Image (tube, rainbow, N blue to C red; front, top):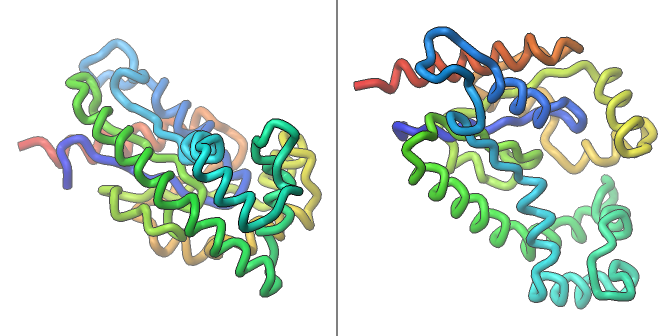
Length: 221
């Protein structure tokens, strides 16, 4: 295990991984040397942000346009993410093929960006741990860059409430998106630790921060 560990965060769609990561980074523990456990101690790397950046890459846009047609591009040539999503998220064979083609185009470039960010974070002497928040961390095989994986366990009703408020999704849209990912049971089984996120975000963040602190103490020579 690396002395500055990468901890992957996984969970169901709308589980609040990003919010729990931020709460953990902001949590203060008297056992840590800094006055606050902040971004200078924990770096949060977002797979979603990396994915958005990759979709702005000219070569990627061209490849996606050639594969999926002009309907996924706006008048400036930018990717219309909802239009692309409608083609690749679902359980039918056509959607599965489209999703595999999308992944073949974008996943290698996303991984490159994530690895670059991890190297940059590890070069900073203030950084003690790295949280990698990536929805498809396990499905994409990116867990091999992680030293540990944590599953954020959030009730389905709460997840639906969140995605309805933030994205305007229905229960059917949530189910279609989750059908393209590993089951929650499989994700949980592949994780090293499980954190309940049932409404009290600060409690979940504190639990993650304390777990990170214990991990770091085990890594001390």
